[in-house]
Length: 532
Image (cartoon, rainbow, N blue to C red; front, top):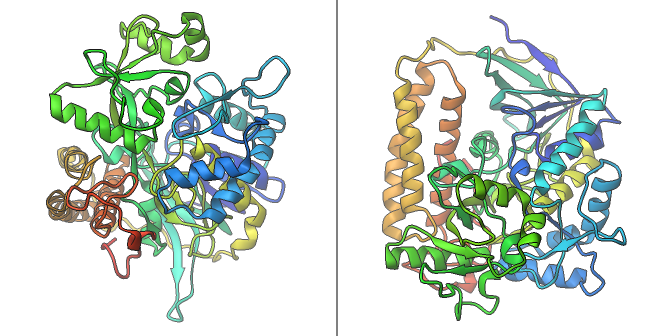
């Protein structure tokens, strides 16, 4: 059956902050199609609690924000990208508020209310209660739904990017194939320029704060067509996910510690006392390792985040969503410490881009968590994620279709060969669980050469099984996501094996110290790295 081909000027894959902001900024210049895996509201942005960092306080400065970012990034940030992002931050936050109606919290004089989070030396986190991401998505989606040049297609699981290459070495991207999940039919989407805004990779790990859609799709798809990826060894584990059998992946925002929350052991003693000058507000990599070490040492299932010393009225006003969710599970954070554990949270590496989101594939841009821009280095400073997303989206929108080129007039039909419907779906679910378990056990908060080697050998076998299955059976969302997390998992392992030191979020027991000679990105390309 011929593949239905949809054409637009711009194709956006993902409906979080990066994708929607880019779509809105470009919609005045052409038609935009946005593909989203489930519903438009489902993205990592939607779950971002803390806020977006920007200098608005008179006692703060761009230099201080840059310094905090570089310090937490442990020598791997790109100073030019960091300075560029921090300088742009106030204007972009104002644009989100004034142009797109995002309702950030304000104080009595109308100025933005500013929070403080781990690693920050000043209050500079602009927020909306403890549901900032959801408010940003609400504002941008409302604006996008009203725009006649924007078409949002839900339940589209992208299979692969459409690309071309020639013997002279030239290459490019001109869209994507997507599986319409409700019907099982694959469609083609052709455009002059494609933006990857697919978010993160938390579902690679057994325990994560991320929603189910975070399956490293963008990194895997970009790598398969030859884009450079890197720094995937730096997976940030958020120190404080709610520990409760009914909580699933509920994050307790770092802003709770920013407002005075203290991490404690079961006996009430301060976990971070004497461990770091910033105490419970130390950078995430430090806090996550301390919690991990405490749990391994004691055998306890969790530690506790205590805000019972704060004003109860302030707690319910500042953190209504967290307070409500805890109450649903029988925890009153006003009077009881919150049980918490670390969980995979944020991917600091990704597809290599410049400050305008250009990848090394003509026609392919990327913005947000899917990227390696140099903003985060070896560890992300809290609330710099939404900042990076909007900065790259704004830069990508400036160059817009100029980065693309005219797509071909004829596009090959999706070829499913002799594939049939699967009668062995248990293989998919079993491999899903095995990938996530081996990543958690061997490539988690603390690694070793032995653990990484064991993970490498096992994931190669799993990927061979997945390749055979992929060729035999018709594609489903579960299969495509498994294909992506297994490839991305192997890329994480390979990046970790190529960094024989401990730096930022990557801690190897066999190399516990930082090596100044390794203060560079770990870059991978399919021509000399992992088989796609």
